[in-house]
Length: 501
View 1 (cartoon, rainbow, N blue to C red):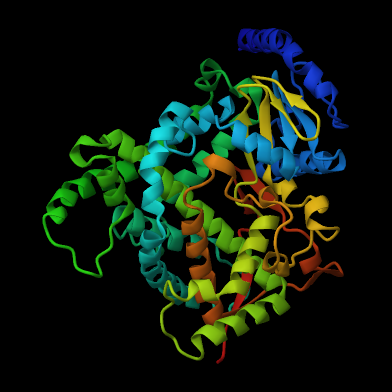
View 2: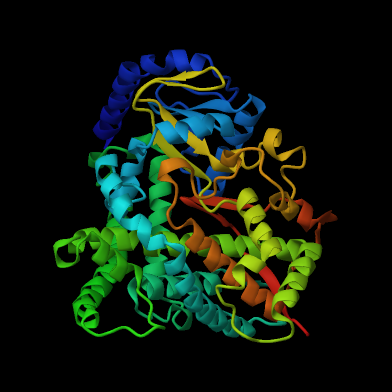
């Protein structure tokens, strides 16, 4: 084993000395007070750390970039990243650099060439095919499913009503899973009634393993990674997730042609799988592998993003009773005392609830970081020139807390911000920005708002303890973990009481 360690150190040193000179001029013009060591760079901070520690260090780099006027440096071994939290610089970068950074190959090992991580030659034609499937008409048709599934979730939450602290994660995660599978694939997996679904556990573990590998350069070489137990664990989790999706696709694809021969009624809904299959050319369009990749993106991203965003929103409403009360007043204006299901026509009327969700996504974006690679020289408005091969860490968490654009109270929860015009469109980017932004942005927002509205109509939400060691809980930030998605380490624990009319 000693020879492997020696060989790995030698490899890291060779790559460091070979490539680092290309970026020294860039890094010399950017301030960073966080110590970096030869070969390791800043990777020593992330060595053998859990998700909570990883997120704490990433937050540190975000604050460092804010302190330095919008930019700072991050070295992971020989790989150099410019950390960016300034919207003006981001506007240029996100429009000019569309290629995902090489580090995302670890995620691509899991999700394939799905549109999130696909190289540009694959991404461009797929984007053209997929974009029309997210039309307002199609999305509005899905609200009925969101409403039905959120009602199931609200009924399941009765098990927690009045019983003290409870985690809402499994309820919102399974709600999102059921909603995505029905809208994307046209199948009811009933995850809310079977919370031990292996798919969901395998997905969470896969994300944890990918996040861990990304920040530890000594795990980059496949020859090394395959000798470690992480690899076998990753492959097993991948087998479970992909097997689940593949089984559904093969079953569903057989029925699509049969269903197409039958005339659909006015209330029938075309699923994403049907829309994608048709848009790509039917039987001559996407192969089973291509359909699996894009469906996997829809299911994985749609489930976790919506669930995480909704859970953080529930927690913020519990921490801020005044905001919760105002949101409930708006719901009463729209629904009165009725128990009627939420419809697509209701969502645009819930303007304050929309602001609450957006303010939550500002402070707690489900994906706090994304990475791009610079393919051609970019002159930033801040005066720094990025050179080809340089990585860019788009620090969403830091951008959302940049006081230059959000004010001195940038760390405070104030939904009213989103009832006003933003100072810069790239100051709020929870679903990325520019030509390669997330196509499912509106889908996720509609799913989250439907879930939160349904819970608020039925339950009053509160924190288990309003004070801890004499400090108001609402004034302390939530402790979060980075496993690709950012999540609450306490698994979104609140208290629920039945809301009286």
